[in-house]
Amino acid sequence: MPKTPSPCIDVCKFKREGHCIGCSMSKAQKSLFKGLKKDSHRAAFVQMLTAQQARMGKYAHWDRAYRKKLAKRKIAAEQIL
Image 1 (cartoon, rainbow, N blue to C red):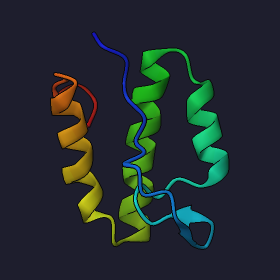
Image 2 (tube, rainbow, N blue to C red):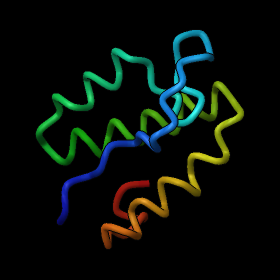
Image 3 (cartoon, rainbow, N blue to C red):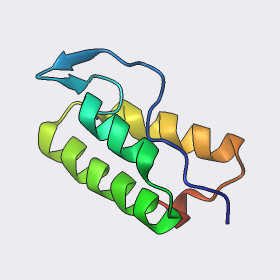
Image 4 (cartoon, rainbow, N blue to C red):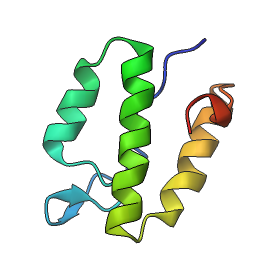
């Protein structure tokens, strides 16, 4: 199975109380994700992030963008999301 890609969707504007308006990650979370080597940990991080987005609201655009990123890399979204 290919490595779970970063949840970053290349917006990188930290305007929501320190969270990116594109993916909801904070700068600390972005650094943490980069350090995750096991794919199971990376996939769990993405699942945690989707829960965070649901709690924060206004991230419906992320799901479409991340699914497109997965499709480009030929990764089934069901394996991660």
